[in-house]
Structures are given as structure tokens and as C-alpha cells.
Length: 291
Image 1 (cartoon, rainbow, N blue to C red):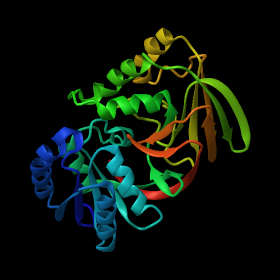
Image 2 (image 1 turned 120 degrees about the horizontal axis):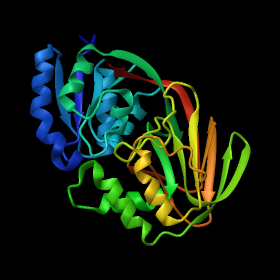
Image 3 (image 1 turned 90 degrees about the vertical axis):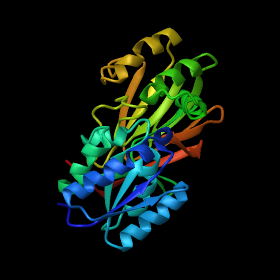
Image 4 (image 1 turned 90 degrees about the horizontal axis):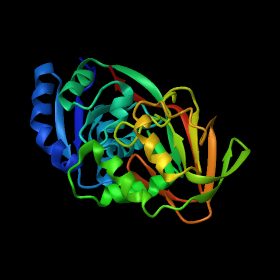
């Protein structure tokens, strides 16, 4: 059993109500494990951050029950402290839970809250904000705009649908990227800076990314025919796309990038900054419960 009680910080609207529907089962699973817990329902990411600070002050594991955006918000309050993050997948993508080996099932994730081990992991910082997965801009920005505006309940398939929609009006951008002082200019689709390496409902964009190596993985996607991009999209779910000639893979501790037209960089499903942007790794700054 975990040494600490658990505060379940739940976003009731996550996954179009999925988290709210699963909450009674999660509470029952925690009771079955004998884990002392309480439940707090969020009304916004700022509210979630306040609840995380409260849980930290009470010596509780702050278990984020929702999507990857909620996890990032809670993680931002716990980083650099003795606080511990718990992961209860309840969103559409659940990519961070996938990376940790927890999987998409919230009831099963309660096993980790009850008997998991603590792991110190890196986080990524953008102007004081924290993210756990991948920050990207360019074509990915357009995909996120479509995904966030879509009301059709497609689950994890939402990102494939959004990519098809976004491709219709896409035109390549000119990029300037700096990785630990080394400059890289190119024309193409996107720049992505990965901590966990997984996003978009199971896309292993940077499959070799490590959560505790003190480095961020950078993925540059250069110009290619639209049909070629779409044909290779399924490979990203297996991480077998990495040998594509249009991809450049780099690693670094500090990454800055901008484009020749405005884009919002998205991280963990939410906009985190407008370009230009600088992203830094914060090594082993967060404790999280893992299997």
C-alpha cells in the first residue's frame, strides 16, 4: 500500500464525461485496496493547481484523474517538491499513462496508487509552465485546433481524424531551430520537443525518449508530399516512422524555435505558448508512482 493517503483530483468533463462515469469504480477500487482517499472535482486547470498545492500541504499523493493536460497542471505544482503524482487515465489520449506502463484503464491504475513505486522523472519547462509529454507547433497546431473543436466522440481516433482535416489547407512553414546552441533551419511541417515521446492517443513520435535521461528529444519534420505524410501516419503508432528521410531527430537540454508565420505550441493537448518559444529540461524534478 502507498505510504500516503490519496487526493483524487478529477476533471469530470475529461474524455467527454468518461472520468465522471468511471469515478465510482475508481473510488471502489481504492477502497478495495484499503487506500485512504478523498475526491476533489476541478472546475479549471488553475483550480486543479490549487488542489494539487493543497494535497501537497496535506502530505497526500495528488492523483490526477483526467487527460494529459490535467496531469501537466498537477505536475507543475509538484515539481521540485517532495510531492508525489498519481496517474489515473480519464482523458481521450492518456499518453503519459501509456508511457509509464500504466495503460488506459483507470481501475487498473488504482493498483499502482496502492502498491506502486516512486520514480523521479524529468519535466519540460516553457516559461515556467510544465509539460510531461510533447510540445509541438506547425501542422500539429492545426491538428490540435481541429481536435479540440470536434464534438464527435471519436476517442483516441480523434487525432487521426483531425490530421486528415488539417491536411486539406496545410502549407509548409520555414523554421529556425536552436538545440543547445546549434542552429537548424528547414522547411516543412512541424517541430516537436518530447519529454515522454508519446502524444495524440498513442503516437510514439519519439519512441526512444527517456523520462529520466536529462534530455529532450527533438523531432523536425521536413517537406514531403501530403500523400506520403498521411501514408506514414499509421507507422507513428508503432514508432516505426523514425527512419523516414523527412525526419531529423536531435537531443538537447534547451531548445528554441520559431517559424515564418504565427503558431501556438501545444503541449499535452493544450496551448502552452505562442512562437517563438524556448523549452528547457528540468532533470528528475518530479516524483511519480509507476508499476
